Image (cartoon, rainbow, N blue to C red; front, side):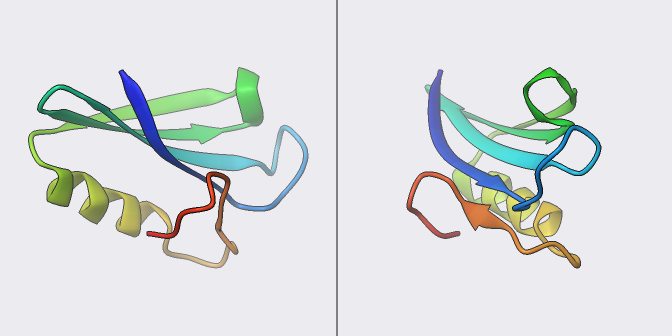
Length: 75
């Protein structure tokens, strides 16, 4: 599995930090929504197309947080 992109909400601390990851494996796309840093709780979503995965990422990045790409890319 290859990690394609990673965003975080710019907040430090286990209670405030949120991350969103976009990963690909062959023809499958995966989105991980993590709350609480490296040891936090995650939700995983699987998609058949890159477009569907990006649509899910856009939805997860909406809201009051100032999401920052950690890989130098933007959505």
